[in-house]
Length: 77
Image (cartoon, rainbow, N blue to C red; front, side):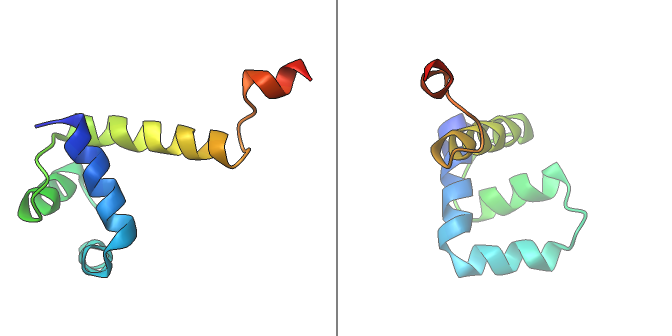
C-alpha cells in the first residue's frame, strides 16, 4: 500500500470515464472503504488514510498552481 498508488488513483479518476462512472454509481455518500475497494479493483493498492493524505496534497498543489492560495513569493511583492 502506498501514497503513490493513492495519487495514481486520483489521477486515473480524472482521466478515465469508466472510473468516473463507477464513482457516480456509488452515490453521494461514499465511504472510505468503498473508495479503497474501488481502487483495489482497478489496480491501486492504498489505505483510506493514504487516500485522504493524497487528496489533501493534491488540492493544496492545485490551489497553489491556480493561484487560489498565495505562495510566499507572491507575498513578498
